[in-house]
View (cartoon, rainbow, N blue to C red):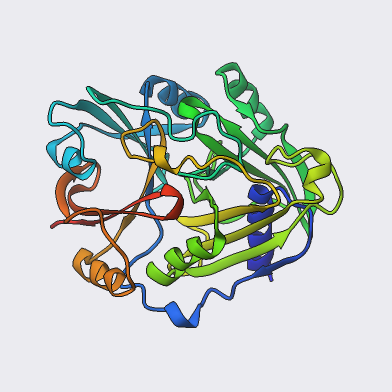
Length: 352
């Protein structure tokens, strides 16, 4: 029961709903139990115009550390189809003490770039809409972020669901990247010992045009299982974290599935669709060298076995695997594929 209630809180944080019409998955989808070693993603990649904006926020405000730094190498140029003349730097940031949920910032020179989710609203589809973190002291952190130019789709929303009282804010910062900040107010959050100000990343959201098509890919092709599903609008008109007009929030259903290879909320993907609110399709901008939240990276123990399993389900890869340096892991072998609505996925195996 506790696991289900925690899942519901995670859902409402992103979906901005007040309805109790929620069902949580059992963690096992019988048709797709074999995922050939695929687990949740370990890091997100943000292609940035200026890494210093993120460095200041992550280290001075969020309490993170710079875990690794390296120049952009030839392998990444091949994986991302960059010109050979391209140069740049990669910076890996981590919540102190955390061993996953990293943020990798890639700053490029000599490459034509545009913003992935340019001038967007939450109901515009294409690329990744946001990523999620837990926070301690959201209001104090928010004041620092506003001073740095961050803005929310709404003010922070405080609400009670079951035994939990939470506050949540989806804010847009450097490079047009949105982050969902979720703070548990009562009772105290357990199981997150490294959370001092801002936790590791643990979930990323795609706004999708067609939920059936998106689920066919993540569940049918990648073999992911359902952690949580929900369909519903807000019970009454009012403020909501997605910035819908107050009256529309009670009329427009938000359809949400949180998916993960083992059916947990750790390196999971959240699919979000609006029934009754449509926007632009920005998937054509969702290329790794473009500015914004560009890639989710999944580690596996056996890349070839994972590729075979995905191919047998009808999955298509952009090209053959590429060998490259990926600090702090070392030398890796990686392959890329693109989900419906343009979300880029990179699967990698660390080489001994």
